[in-house]
Length: 97
Picture (spheres, helix red, strand yellow):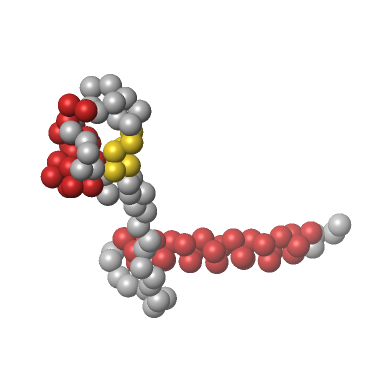
């Protein structure tokens, strides 16, 4: 090699420089609140799956189940007409939605 070995590194170095400049410019624009010209998509929000049933554990009452599931006691009673707070059994499935 005579002295021309550096030329094979020129294209990758130019690409890395251009990519770095692009990233810096994009981040600067995002931090300043400017909008990009690219179309924006709505961000998908992840939600927890809604539990339809509650499995009764030791110490559970309709009030405790209501607080843990954020479902009113009245709704739980309406969905489970044969269940009362005093007739809950461990392992029993209670409909909450």
